[in-house]
Structures are given as C-alpha cells and as structure tokens.
Length: 452
Ligand code: PMP
Image 1 (spheres, protein in one colour):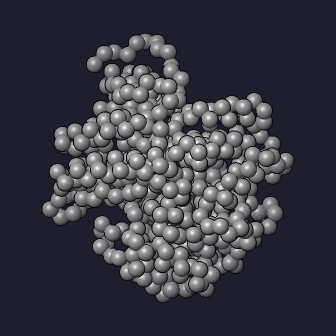
Image 2 (cartoon, helix red, strand yellow):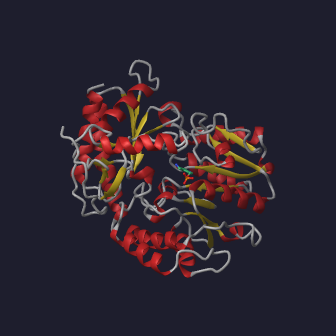
Image 3 (tube, rainbow, N blue to C red):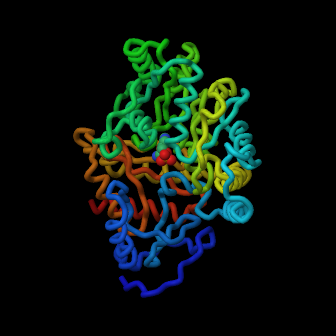
C-alpha cells in the first residue's frame, strides 16, 4: 500500500476512464477520510452512507475516489447510472441544454423537451392504449402523484402496498414502505388509508403465484373492501425489500383483480425500469400492463427526473394545477433523459442487461453450489441478488451479509445490501461495465465470502 500523493489531477469521468480495479490506500484513504470527517460535522447524521469514499469521477464500470483508488461499480448509485456515468450522449445533451435554457418552470412556460420525454414514456411503457405522462423530481414524488391521481380518478381513498415494499421516504411513501428501520422509525404519524398485504416471496413462502395472489386478494376483500380501494401499488421486482421476484402468475392475478374491481394497478418501476431487468420495464417480464407506471432513477442517466405514465383517462382526472412542482421536468434533466432513452433504445442496452444476467447468475449459482450460506440467487437482467442464510435453519444472516459487503468494498468493489432482513447483496452494475470487470468484481465478492 502506498500513500496517496498530496495533490492529484482529478480525472474526467466517462467511458475513457481506465477500466481497472486499483486500490492504493486503505479505504477510506486520507483525502476521502478528510472529506468524510467534514461530512460528519456539516451534514445531518440521518443522511448515512455505506461506501466510505469521496467519489470524484466515474464511468464505464468504475468509480474513482479522492485518493485515486478505482473501485469496480456494482451499484450504479442504486440503479441510476444504468447507461453509465457520464455517457457521452448524456453529457453532450446536458452541456448543450445547460448553455441554452436551465429553467422556466413547465407550469409557467412549457418547453419541447418535457413534451418529448412524455411522448417517449407514453410510447415505451407497457401497453398500446392511449397514455399521458407527468414529470417530477424523485421516485417518491412520482409515487405520491400516482396515488393522488388514482384517488381523484376513482373517488376512493384506500391504497394497498405489500410486505417488503419500498416506495420512498416522504410522508405518504414512508407509509407505503414496509421496513421500519431505517426508513420509518420515529418519523410517524403516517398518512391514513394505507393497508399492507402479503407479497409473493417464493424462497420464503414456497407458495405458487396463484396461491400468494389468492391470499393477498382475500386480505384486501375482507379487510378493506374493493369499493373503498383506489389503488394497489407494487414493485414488479421488489428492490430494497430484497430483489424479490414474485412467483409466476402472482402479478397478473393481482392486476386482473384490480381490473375486475375498478382499482388502479400501479407498477412502481422506479428501480426496475429502463432496461435494468433485461426488458425496458420489468412489468413486461410478467405479461402485466399496469394502469399507471412510476419511473425515476435510470430515466435520465444520473440527472434527477421522475414520471408517472398511464392510461390517458386516469391521468387526465386531476384538474389543471393539481399536479406539478417548481422543478418537475427540468429542461436539463429532460435533455439528459432524451439522450439516455436514445441509448436504451438504440445502443443494445436491453441485450447487454440480458448478457449481464447470464454472467451474474452463472457465477452466483456456482458460488451457491459451493457454499450453502447462499440460500437463494435470483433476479433479472442487471438486477440480481444473493440471499445469505444460516444453512442449518434458513434463518437470514445479516451479519455475514454485512461482513461480505464491507470486505468487498475494502478490496475495491462497490456492492450494496438490501432486504427486509438485511441479508441480501444486490448486484446492479451499470450496463457500460465490461465482462472482465464484472467477473473480477465477483471474484472479489467470492474471496470476501470465503474469508468470513
Ligand atoms: N420506489 C422504488 C421501487 C425505489 O426503489 C425507490 C428508491 N430506492 C423509490 C421509489 C424512491 O425513489 P427516490 O429515492 O428517487 O425518491
């Protein structure tokens, strides 16, 4: 290990950044530590972090820190930089738009790029019915607005969310989110008329999709009543809850019940959308056409943008002025989204996500064969996870999960954990990562597991 130079040139991000894992200091190195110390003094403690570096550049499949360490990126900033950090098309679009027009507020003077993003979303989201969109800043804001729209459309109030759900940290979305720590604890009271029912978690419930759906529907009918229910919201693959892929038939049965009962079916594709799962939207993998879809994260290559897209008659039920916000659909974010969407559609990124699925599943399944502490390997596309358990009992092993993730990070690989029980490592690489880097990242995770 060498000491970092006192001054260093900060590299430009993007795909030309050397694609290598290079760890030349302890993690965090001295310069990162200095910045993290300042963070501890200046930034509210509630804003935590899991990878103890100060990032200065990223691109392809690496993140470079303030000490010049180059870490393999298996997290994409939580599924955001799916096209890659500093994708050339996105950088060019941002620079050109920033020089031309950064803000008017779409609710004051509209501009074309917002309209073009809405048109693209209406075309790309599942289903060929007439659709409309509205743009916002964050996933949570999109979810809040989807619920507002569903309530206005139906004239009903109740909303159903599922076990293991994550929908955000604002007041309404905290209520929809399942996990108390760290997302909800001490932050109540939460919004009313939110009800939670069981999800499909094949590794733990061993239920068929039809049986899991029948259970959920029975709870809804007995405890809420379809006549009171405005919307059911669900992540097609549950993200923060543990990358849980529902059993076949679960989502389609819930969607059908919603259709039969005049309930708005909302797919929260904030994490699973935009090629992440090897389809443009994860709903497609399950043959489901949602009434409303919420998107964010991958939509704009790292710029803050979110959307609600759905059936035109539902979307139009909110009166003029009822939806919006000062920054929603900012011109620079919209320009970035149009460039990212161009890349998703024309640069083979859906196929790339499918290749990454193959590589990740093959390696992780081999690791699971050799080590029974990996109880389950699951996911689609570049959204894959390993669930760690006590092999004797199947009980979740959060301590092992955390130790493996920490060891991988110390060895130059960014991995994220998730799961209601904190026992899942999720793999969310940017689609711009090379096979070589991805394999090397998995080698490091395998060594970290062996060492713990
Ligand atoms: N929904 C889902 C499925 C998510 O994964 C997230 C973020 N992890 C959100 C909503 C909230 O998005 P944001 O953090 O942009 O508010």
